[in-house]
Image 1 (cartoon, helix red, strand yellow):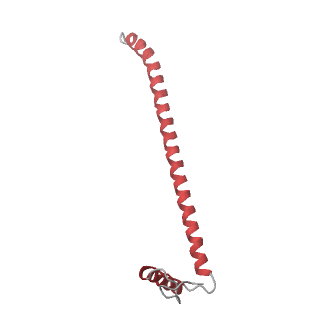
Image 2: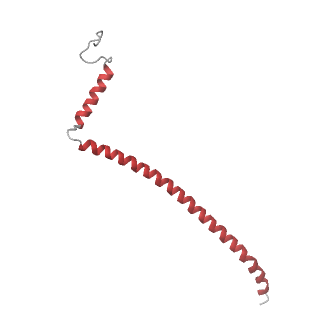
Image 3: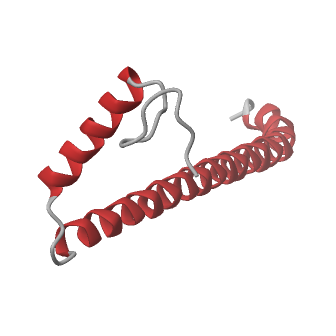
Length: 103
């Protein structure tokens, strides 16, 4: 029972130390939550941007598929033909021979 007198000052000193440590841990937890919230907000903004871009692409694809009279294969072949003309010709329009000038 004589040892109880020693514990009273130790307990009296431990109470403020525990209070300070608890407050510090609470601040660390709040900073962690803020950091996580900021990272989450940035990721959400990136995802929103990607979703917007994908929605735009889907709209274009829907327009291509639903356009009446739009033949995808014909358009692709026309582009291939145009590329072949651009690669192999000297830029002279059809029907005009080199050396002649258009009127």
